[in-house]
Image (tube, rainbow, N blue to C red):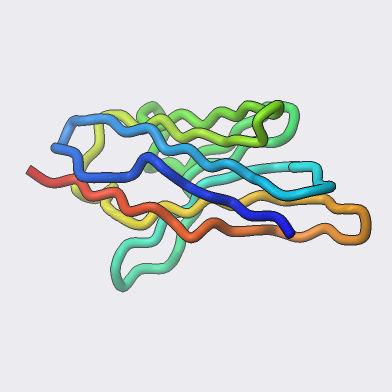
Length: 119
């Protein structure tokens, strides 16, 4: 079994910054691409950013220049550095990972971490 656990969410003022982390744990697995999604109330879940195992990144237009995704392959961890936050960034942020195991390959999701941007 593989688990993804996010951390780093919280309440921040407009213009502030937060850093999210997501660590994959378990046995006998290899992590391919990893990503961050978010879901605001009454809205669909949307891609924020993704990163391949080799470090190639992809960002949603609404976070370009403000958010940075990175990963530490040795720790099976992905990060999302968020700056210049605004209230529209408030949402539950979910981590996902494309994980290869000896007899399977599937996408795993974390339980999410709440980010609230408010004064």
